[in-house]
Length: 274
Image (cartoon, rainbow, N blue to C red; front, side, top):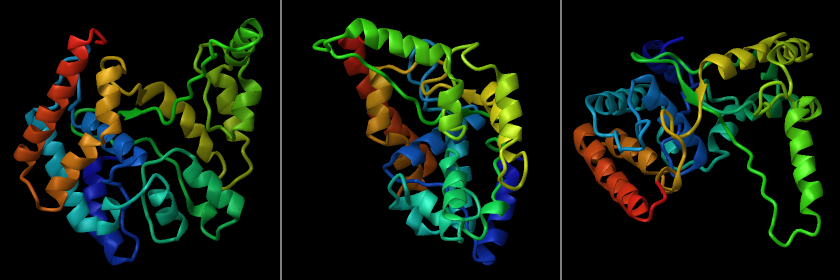
């Protein structure tokens, strides 16, 4: 329920042959997990005015905390994962905890893995400041300028977004509606509770996670060109990994990340994109 509990459990789980699997690699899931982890400590890449705010004592605290989790309860494979790395780690039967979307539970169900009924879904653990994570992952639709029937394309997207029941069900609860009323939470909760997989009702928690603990990448501001470049360069996983691997102190790693991120934001601000 809390990150402190995770840290306490880490050495016991590793000793039992089931280490944790929170990636610190140059890939999507590590980005999502570690930036969400930062928010739990009250640390953010930017503020609501899109000013860089990564260099704080809270960030240093979070980085040191995660390094401790790694040393006590993880293995060095977390530094070399691709986006499927933590999933496969869980599917192997070794992993005890990962931060991921529900593909982490749906795939074992589809494959009928022997431990599929022992997998639980939980909100991100609470940190000293908050219990908060990014939505994962977002879809983005575009209509090409050379499209032959843009009016019909726009109508299709509008119809899809305001009538999302079938899309939600077809995605096995992976894709939530973007707009209020597209498929009410009360109905989502009811259908999620009827999922036949054990433990029964485990998918109902998705509505709680969506309503209480989920924010957009870039929070408390919006996603923008600078945040996107920072994200795609995996500067946050790099910051964490440098400390976990003993290459830099937490303060130095945070300062280095701050310099890199500030340069990116300065470039895009000069370009008028922020």
